[in-house]
Each structure stands twice: as structure tokens, then as C-alpha cells.
Length: 258
Image (spheres, helix red, strand yellow):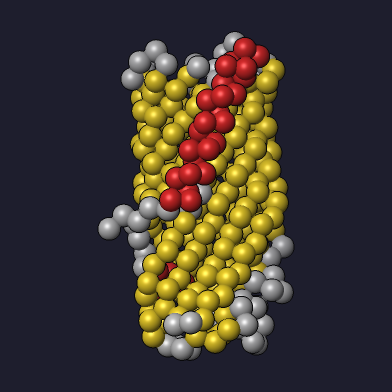
């Protein structure tokens, strides 16, 4: 069964409307050779890891949240907007919500966020919404290849909730994460290409990676379709929170050049 988050859908719809509203203005200032694009993606995600311990000390229990929610599939939409700023310089905006809400079972008693949950039936919610702005620069381009690199600022809004009987507790967190960005494009013919796009950084006690590989084919003068795969991996090991998750996606969607 494919599970869909209404909050995720609303968030994507809001950014899609914003991107469409900004598109005429951005297109007027975009440089030749860097068209303005709006992209709508439907992703199907499976999780193969989601380990949680809150608090991250002897009073918290480390457990596998994915064993409670199941591996998926889960609906994971995304909207992306990009436009030229100056020759070789580009702005990219991304909204990538991800929400899971499922009933399952704990195979052991769990101390989570100051509450104790017995082994047995439990409801779990996991949310990891990502909103990003990227500046990238085209540093190499020829007949076959294009390469871009830049910096991404990411706002993450995360939440984990457990409910059992009359007990509910939520741990949420919103924060800023700086990432490195890389984009590569290999043209196959006049109408099709392979693209790689990634944001990522690892260091200290955490990491974040969002890596995408796609096949893109032009369907008309302004429209392209795509299909691909994505790896979303990361987490943090801090004094208050331990959470590392990994998701694999199959993605497909449309790009519009304005």
C-alpha cells in the first residue's frame, strides 16, 4: 500500500504555486543558456534503516523505528525551481517533504523522550521535511558534458512521535544545515540525457546526503519527462538525539522550461 502525507502534499503545492508565481520574473532576468525550470516529482520511497534513541544516554532506549512503521512504500513528492542569476550562476530552490504515519509493534519496552512504552502495539509518526536554496556555478561544459558545483543551505523540520494507549510524546527539531552541491549532465542525443544531482556533507557526529540519478527525455519544446533513483541518508549523534535513517526512492516526473 502506498502511504501519502496530506501535509507533504500541501507543502509541495505551496512551493509549486510560489515557483509558478516567481517564474515570469525570474525568466525575465535569466541568462541565455540557463533557462528557468519548474519541476514536479512523484517519489516512491522505501526505508531500510531508521534507528532512534532519545535522549541519547542511559535513560533512552535505542530501537528501530522502521520495524514499527514498516519499510514502505511511502509517497514522497518534491518540487524544484531553478533559474539563471548571471552567466554560469544559478539559483535552485527545493521543497522535499517526507512523512510516515503507521501502526506497528515494539519488540521490547522502550524509553523514548521521557516516556516508557511497553512491548506491543504502538503508533509511530516520522516526518523529515527538507527545504533548500542552492547557488551553483557551471565550471565545465562541452558538447557532451555539463558540470556544476555550489553550496546549499538546508532547513530541516523533523519530528518523531510515539503513541500507545493514552500516552503520546513528540520530539521535533528544526535546524539549518550547510551542504555541498554537485550536478553533472551527460547528453546522450539531442532529446535525452543522464543527470546526477547531489547535496551532501559529513563531519563531526552527523551526515546528510541526497543523491539522485535520472534519465531525462524531452517531450516537447518546453517539457521533459524523467525517471530515476535516489538515495537519502543521514542523521545525527548528539547529546540529546540519536537518529540515523536511510531511504531509497524510485522517482518520476515532469520538467517545464519557462
